[in-house]
Length: 288
Image (cartoon, rainbow, N blue to C red):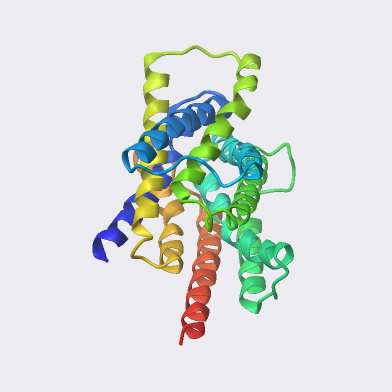
């Protein structure tokens, strides 16, 4: 149990570090994401081969929908990195971390389930936190644009998470990740012809590191940790991702968040943690 929880923490730390690559590599976010999913899909394929998992899906429709989800994943990561490049690691991670609240709002709508009071309260708190961070409602302000891209990143990831809900019952999470990363690679490939960039050893090696260690390995650790750690507990640990990322941003880039960002971030993370704890308590009651 302790080892599994440690794996979850290490995975979340690696997730938090991934955002720093937007500052380490001053290239277009599409290039960042292309490198990430390209190397991640190769690494995931090798992991699936080593663990002797069958790569085939149940029907042709699954291939089609996972390809669409790969495009959604590409948009999610491009908007996430773009948010960080426009402003700061803190802004990008905090706005993205609101995605569980989009899930709690969208889930009842898409799956025709009952709305819960805790979901509405959590969403209100998260919106309040985001509003606190916003310096002014103007697209002339780069921080405001970064927040908008961060929220789009959160919203698209929430859609992706809900869409994956039906597939995790039929396929392993690693297999789904492989197909979505591979599809994202194909989806982003045409965009490279419209961008100006130069391949260098630093760029390729950093993208390799991002794709293998901070994507494929981190997802593998997280999924492996879920074998003995409840999903609700893992979601609470996952809320530490922006905390890890912000601390590392201070260490590596001396990006110290201002008071407005700290207060807003605290409200957002509190809303996410409250929502996760509420789900955990509700789940425990239902199992009694």
